[in-house]
Length: 139
Image (cartoon, rainbow, N blue to C red; front, side, top):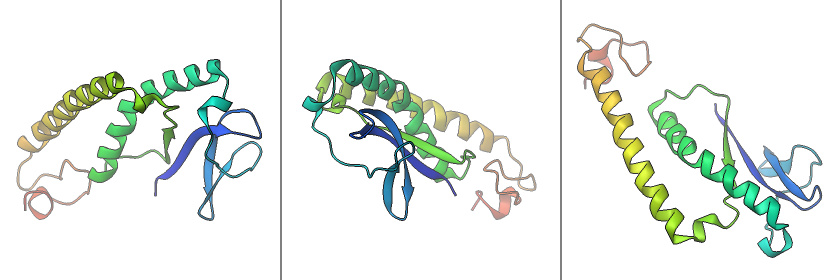
């Protein structure tokens, strides 16, 4: 099962850290404090800029990983979700990111379709289930 980890601001460490779920509570991996909501005005600007850049880089990969989880083809032990550090409030970033996601989603579905298009009835299913295609995704 894929675990979810969050990168968010830790008040105790005074920096962006990774939080892991422990008994339905997210705790900082370094200081074990609970994940709390933080006002962006209390975070230094250089840390916000750094986190926004990290979020931009991870945005598309997180979306693609979620698609793979739904398809059953995601094989990493955890998925990292970065805090947006207020970036989603920017309408320009939102439009740009949605356009990028639409392009990548189309590319992903096209590649996936091509795999299935070449599969014969008695071949192993391209989805990775190890069943024959006729008993799995052909239905």
